[in-house]
Image (cartoon, each protein chain N blue to C red):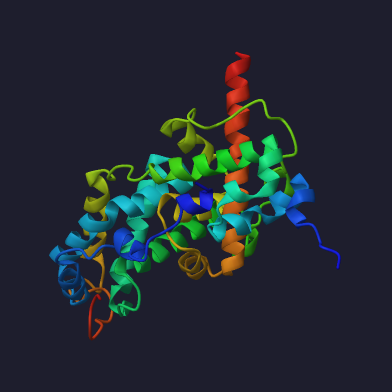
Length: 96
Length: 210
């Protein structure tokens, strides 16, 4: 019986990068990927994408909008013809 | 750890991102009945996240404040339709995303459909990377640089990247917010990360050339 070699051993960079979104989404342990054991380029790509995802998590929060924003909203609400009735049809239940 | 693993979310991820906020449910009910003070409470609770989304999408403080205002005025008009099927913050975020998309369409691309917004032209897309190992990003990107690179992403990529990687929404929630498929959201996220890498590496090259 012929044993088929795992696809990863002959995988090209294009093949690997084609699979990369799926590998990320399924939380695959990429260190076990054969292609990365021999390809510095894709290893660097994976490392960079991991780094970008990590750094993005540190970006929130920015800061509050200026107080003028609420002042404008309040003015608009008070000038709204529906003001005092919630501006909309009240729902029977609120929130979670 | 893989990028997938860095995004791996525990079972209570939804609760982490949308933790129960003391007094929120009461404020929603009171605001639905027309209580301005309660509406102000909701504004105070959610203004930062809505503003952050607007600012990241527009890159301009004045425009971001205008859209934050629009989003909360929309909230005022529509809060009566909130039934609690999803977390209030997710529902509000969806409303804010729609305000942002409407603005982007009006601004530059009046005929643009959401699918087009989510699928930038070939020129704007990321390149495959089959070489060029000269630069590594790891450890070298500060917050300001990353924020600037995010600003340079095409709007569709930027929106999905901000919602998923920055704000922690799941693909099914993003698909719901943007009325696109989950597969589309996943695909756009990957392209956005690849494009960001291109942008960050280009920036590094320019810096090192000076």
